[in-house]
Length: 130
Image (cartoon, rainbow, N blue to C red; front, side):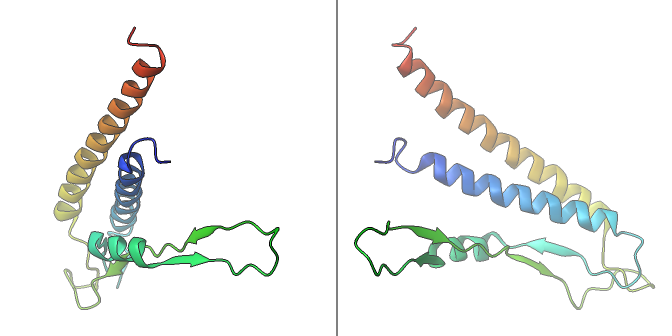
């Protein structure tokens, strides 16, 4: 039984995406002066496709074994191999990275607010509306 109809799971997937994107942006900013470093980004589409398609199931050879499904997660991080923004071969555009970071922070905070709303609703139900 899924208590929230999959809402919490979907929000969790969104938070995983936002966290990975934040780490990728931070890595790009940290390597802004590294020669020949290529900027990286996260593809939401590839993460979504991987989440749908990559489930591993166990083969049981005894009736006493438990059924389980394990999800295989691939990051969806890619780099811009042919991007060269500066003379030293570095492909990081600091202004673009800061804009992506601000946008991702807003997205992450919106997801956190939604999770909090769901959990507050559950808390209200548990307390009997008080």
